Image: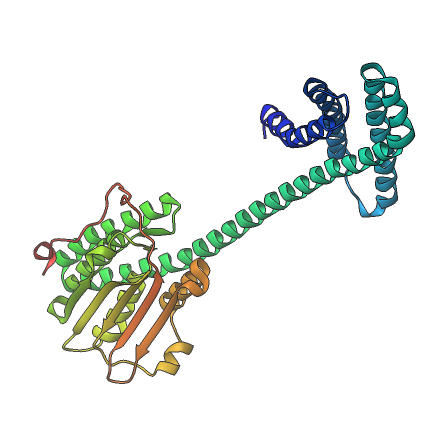
Length: 370
């Protein structure tokens, strides 16, 4: 807070007390409005100036448990000094500006009460000061804790993504190597597609953001599927059921591709006749529901939960790290009944899709079919 702003707020805080004091003075006999305002201004102004000194002292004298007695003694002495100085100023004001009997009456009847009032006022000023200091420290600690937690989560997400990216790159290169042996021409086209995939990976890593619009993630997945079609041909059929309103929702980058890769590797590629891959995205209330399913042989659900590979386990951990209980990953499968993975995450949208250099869009299927 700037000094000017503090001074304005500090003065405004004393204004109600000055007004109240002026009203009390105005009720006294032989005290006109001008004298009441002057007296209130002098008295409360003095209290405010002394209070500013007390406030400054409170920022220098901090409470420490091991020096508790010294802290209390310092403020006890200062409160007596504050009350004594304030009362003396009021007494001098009455002596030189009020009738003699008013001064005598103040010294005989109100002097002690005025000192006590000054002590209480001192306690109020330093109490507010310490309360605001404590609140400021608490806010700072909360900000530091929030930043520390954000950095921890970011580090965990990046570690999980770092685990996932080499896994994806290794598997893709393995597929391209196998394709080059079978059909060099298709292998070259696969290398071009791989270059597009790699550029996306590098762009997302450079952005230092874990989240990307679903439209971009789908573009990445479509390019990956185009590469897989070069290897599998008509054995890989893809069906998309995408709600257009869901395209601007943010998802974790590289969260769909591992699910698609898993479906192809375990559900479609092993079958002589191939199979169908279904990708769906839908908005359900305030949640985004993503599904990746295949019509392959399926698996035993209990064994899948125990033996999830790098892709599935990394995606699950990233969801838990990013959203906690606000997101979930479900696996629905059974022998000879296909395999479905459902991700449910908060439907957070961005008004403007981030433009990236080399943004991936849906590939031209005709251009990549063998």
